Length: 305
Image (cartoon, rainbow, N blue to C red; front, side, top):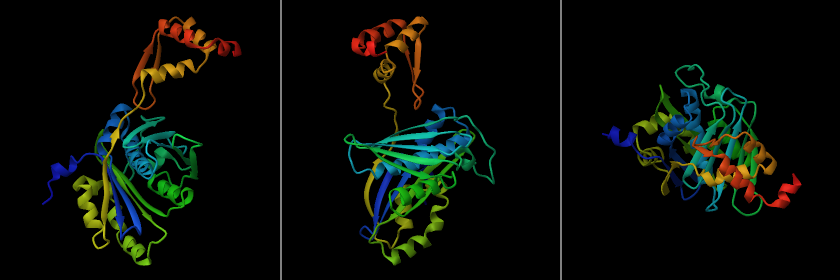
């Protein structure tokens, strides 16, 4: 009998698998703790938490498919829904997420959070893969439904030319995230008709991904779901919600405003508070700090303004 406590407490992570020697590749992730942390950070409604749980899971897989070490993947969804724009940044196993209107709440529809209404479908998904050298790769596709699973599948299939099955889910209520995660299955060019038919037979398994992840660990699910398909685990990587903001970065952002804007800030005679969009950390800069920044601005730049 499965130990409910141990599986529910399984740490967030990404499981990468191959089926039949590489005919298909699979990523399964658990993002429960990250979603709870993000919901608390942004004082999110239950609707927003459900959207963030799915969004973090899809973004985590996009990050896992990035081959270049040290690169970052930024995913933006703007669908015109009640929640406004959503942004997630993935760097290795570290993610951060922000929502324009995290307190927006919508009524539950047939027992499920109205993620489609929160996200909206009148817009697009943009993915920026920044590998640290050369121009970043930018992929854009129109949203399909706002449910996010369909939208990530559309992005993989249309923008990256990889036919993909995507199931994302978040089980949450009254400020508590019980389970969040997802699965992405991609058929490779050498994928056989037999493999495709076998995957189609397993589609019902993935429909309730968040409930499945609530009850069992990822490796247990993988063994059960892909029995007979020569499933091989490539890696099991931990995932964390971690922001890389710092006081120094905020200082740089202020300096980038230019001397004219800095003088205008200084003339107010009050402290300047810079709040991170992702982790909500507040960094305070006194008038003395602003004077120091003005001293660091090159004179020729001052003349340009």
